[in-house]
Structure formats: C-alpha cells, structure tokens
Image (tube, rainbow, N blue to C red; front, side, top):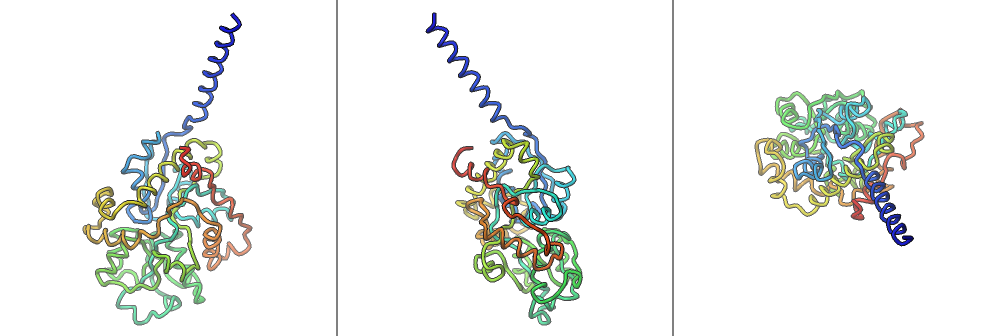
Length: 341
C-alpha cells in the first residue's frame, strides 16, 4: 500500500511540475502589433525574412506589421501604445531614456547603419565637405528618424547646426527616388535599394557610406548598432515568454540571412521591394550585406558609438545621464543562440 501511495505521489508531482512548466512557457501575448518605418528597405530585411519564412507563426506568434514612413513614427506608435514592439534604430533607446521613457533593444539586426549620404549630381561641384550642405534641402526617411540623426551628426562635425539645413521627409522607397529625380531635394540620406538605384542611374554623388566595415571605421571608428528590435521595459518584464519567442524568430531569420545567397533573398522578398528592377535589388543586397549582425549582440563599444553619434548634435543629450546597460537586454538573444528556444 505504501508503495502504491508513493508511486501515486510521484505521478502527481510530475503532473504538477509539468503543469508548472507549461504555465511558465505560456506565451502571455501571442497577438502583437509591430511598428516599422520603411519595411521594404534592406535595413529591415531580417523583419521581412522572419515574416515571409514563417518564423513568427512557428514561434506561436500572430504579428501584425504596421509600416510607417520613417522610424520616428514607429517610435511614436510604441510610446503612444498602438504598437507593442518596434524594429527601429538603436539610437531611439538612448534618446528615450534621456526623456524618461524606458525602452530597450532585445536583439541587434544591423551592426552598421547602412545609410548613405549623397548630393544631387548637379550640386556636387559645390559640396566638398559636410559643411557645404548648409542651407540645402536634405531628404530623409522622416524627420526625427535615424536618417535625420545621421545627417545631423555629420554636418555637426563641420560646425553646421540641425536648423541650418532644411530636413524633408521623403520615405524609403520610390517616393525618395522621385524626390531626388524631380529636384525637390539637394541631398539625401537613405537606405538601399534607394541609394543603389540613384547611384546606378547617375543622379547622385556619394559623400558618406556606412554600409561597410571601412565606411563605418572612417565615420564612427567602428561598429555603430543600427536596426534593432525594441520594446518598453515594462512590457519585457510582464511578457518574458512572448519576448523570448519574438527574439527566437528574429534570431533564426538572421542566421538564415547569414548563409543566404542574393538569389535566395530575391526569391523570398515581395517583388515590390525591387523598385521595378530585380538586378538592382541584387546589387543593393550585395552592397548592404556586411551591415547585418551575425550575433544579435550589441557590443559595449557599439553602444558607446551610438551615444557619441547623438552627442555630436543633440543639445538635450549633453547633460543627460545615460545608463547604456539599460538600452540593451541581452538575455533573450543569448538564450536563442544557446538553442534554449
């Protein structure tokens, strides 16, 4: 009888522990709204891959993607509560901390910004330095976005203040191409495939290129984290299983991307991403591939470089006390990398 009771007790304990484990693994919020500014740009390719390859669904998530004209608008959607998560620029986590809004990145998607600053070809003769952009109309994805930060930081090196240029939102697709071709802007900071198209068409002269190791070393002295996945820190605390499954999906997409050929990419993304020219998109991907993160981890030096970028032009950051450790929560990507998904 004692043996039977003991066995029954063990079975009950196993059932309870199994139920407890299931409770711990339960996705708290399987339905997520994700904000992004310019989904078709190569900057956000890992997001499109996670979606198109079915990795979100594989992780038990139903992700609704809202695409905005630029990263500042997707950030606003998170702060305002209409989005749960954003794929956006790492710099936003720093700037929001200075404003008392705690958001944190949970995986790095891009280790370089992948942004290119260029001047319209007929203006090139009069632009020999970043300072020569003073007074010009410069197209960015959206005012307040990472493309805006990029140009602000570069012109600040030559003593030009943000309000001494005209910043115009042009998006990240055909609208950006059209703005340059129609002469609506004098210069542009944008992403691929837009910049490769304008370059191949002979519309621009490139002044700064952050798509490669060499370009980033020249501009920033090393890696400068770019696209990340970020959320409010209280959301992370309340929904750790959800966040883990989300990071698992993105991490799997980055590992697929690491081994993918350009041909694999064009077979996977929607045709509208090609801007009407598949060969152009192939060239743009080849130019941009070095920018993608292979580890998902933002290095301490990368965090510092991100802060330094903002300090160059943003007076609000001068006296801000920033704890960079609060801008990136590495627990989830480390777990994904260890295969504990």
